Amino acid sequence: MRRTAADAEITRLEILSEARSSFARDGYAGTQPADVAERCGVTRGAVYHHFVSKAGLFEAVLIELSEELDAAVTAAAGKAPDTRSALEDGARACIKFMGKSEYRQIVVEDGPAVVGLQRWYEIDRSIGLGNMELALAILESEGNLAVAASDGLARALFGALTELGLAYSRSELKLEEATDAFVQLIHQLGVRSG
Image 1 (cartoon, rainbow, N blue to C red):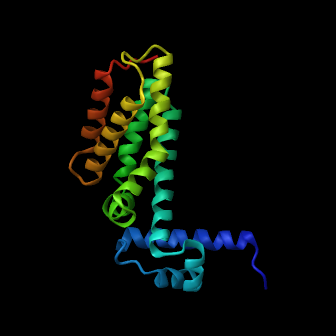
Image 2 (cartoon, helix red, strand yellow; image 1 turned 90 degrees about the vertical axis):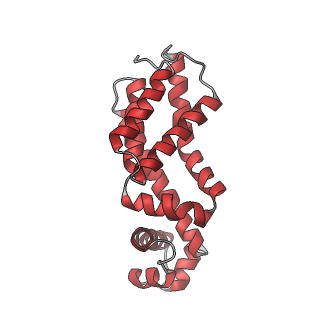
C-alpha cells in the first residue's frame, strides 16, 4: 500500500513528538533514534528519512519549542491594551516559557552543545528578534520611546530578555525578579504607555 504525503506528515509529527518527550526526559545523550522509532511503531529508517540524523531530529525539536515560545509571547502581547504593556506582557510570557522543564533541558542545557552556539543563536534570533524590533518601531511611531529605535537597541533588549529568561530557567532568578528587571530596563529607556 502506498503512503500518502498526509500519512508521511503524520509519521513525521509522531516522531517529532516522541523525540521531544525523550529529549526532555532523557536529554540528548540519553535519547536513541531507535527507541524513538520503536515507541512510534516505525522503523529507524523512517526516523532518518524525515530527519537525516539524531542531531537533525534534535534541531527540529529545538525549532518547534522556539516557535512555541514565540507564539506564547505573541499571544500575551496581543492581549495587552497598549504597546508598552504588550512589551512587558510579552517579556513575562517569554521568561515564564523559558522556565519550562522541557525548554530548559532541550534548548538551554543541550541546545548549544548539540547544534553549536552559533546555530543556537541564529534560531533564537530568527524567531524572536523581529518581535522586539516591531515593538520598538511601534513605540517610536507612537511617540512613546524616548530614544531612537535601532537595530542595536533591539538586539540589546533581546539579549537582555534572553539572559533573564536563561537565568530564570536555571533557577538563578525568580520569575518576578527577571520580569521586574526587564520592566525596569525599558522604563530607563523612557518607554511610555500609549
